[in-house]
Image (tube, rainbow, N blue to C red):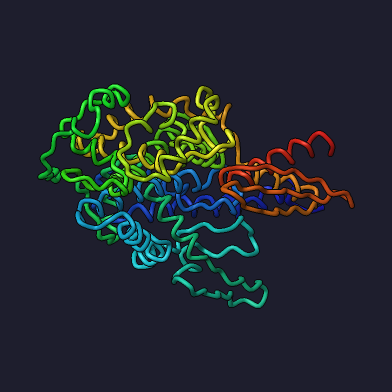
Length: 463
C-alpha cells in the first residue's frame, strides 16, 4: 500500500495548472510595470485587465481579448482619423484613407509591439503541461520562433512557439481597449504615445475656418437643425456636409468627403462604446454583431431616407437624381418600419449613408469635438438601435456554420443585370441539392438574402 493516498496524489496533478495561473497573473503585473511610470498614473486593475487583453480565444479561458480588441480597434481608428483630418487640411478623403491604413495597419502595430517587447506576454494557446513554456521566452521576436530544450534526458523537449503578426496587432488593440475601458480616453491615448505611435489629439486645436457664405442661399438651415436636433454655430459646416462632389456652384463649400471620413470614425467609435457599456455581459461575438448591424452604409442610408435628408442634398447629378427618385417612388413602405439594414432588400444610393457620416463629422467639429453631442443627435436619427434581442447575425456566416456542423457543402452563384444583382445559394445535403434565389441592389445584399432564405428552408427540413 502506498504511504500517500490516491486523493493526495491526484491533488498534485493540479499543481501545473495552479502554477500556470499564478504565472499568468504575475506576468500581467509585470507587463503593467514594464509599460513604465507614464502608465502608472492610470488606475486600472493590476492583474485582470492586462491578462484579459493578452489572452486569445485559443486559450479556451472564460475570458479573452476579443471584446477589448473591438473596443481598442474603434478607438484607434477614431484617434488616427481625427489626427489625419486635423494635420492634413488640404488632403482629400481618398488620400487620408490610405494614410490611415498605413498608420494603423497590422504591420505597423506588430512593429510597435516588437519594439516595446510586448510579444512575449501573449497567451496564444490552451494550457498544456507537456508543452508549457514560460511566457516571455517563446515569443521574443516578430516572425521568428525560439525552441527551448530541457537538459535532463528524463524530460521531454518543449516544442516551438510562434505567433502570427495579426494576433500581435490584435493584442495591441486589446491593450488599447483595456486602458480605454478601465481608465478612459486619456489613458488609451497616452498608451498609444508610449508605444511610439506618431499621433496627436487635435481636439485642443481651435477650429480655423475662413469660409464666409450665406448658408440659407443653399440649404434650409432651420429645417435641418430640427431634423438633427442640433443648432449649428458655423452653418458652413452644415452646407459642406450636404454638398455632393457633383455640385459645382460659385460660392459653395467643398464637398462632404472629408467630413464623411471624419464622421465615419466618430460614429463607429460611439456605437462601439455604447454597446460595450450598455451590454457588459454580452459575448465578443454578440458585440461584433451589434456593431456590424449598426455601423454600415445601408443602416445610415435608410435612416437618412426616413428623415427626408435626401431633399436637402446639394448635387448636380442627373444619374443620382434618377436613382433616388426611383427608390423613393417604388420603395416607400420599408422606411416606416424598424428595419434599417440589408434586411429591407433594397439599396438606396450610397450618398445617403455618406451624408449621415458627414453630418456626424460636421456636428463633431461644430460642437468643439463633443462626442456626446454627436451621439445625442445621431442616436435619434438612427433609432431603433440594434439590441441583443433584435440583432440579426450575418446569414452567410450562419449558413456556413450550419453546413459545417453537418458536413454539408455550400456555394453561391452571382449575376448582375440591368442594375439588379441576383444570387443563388446552394447546399448539398446527402445527394439532394437545395437552392434559394434572391435579388438585391448589390451582390452583398443579394447574397445575405439568399443565405437567409435557404437557411430558413433547411431548418424546416433538416433535423
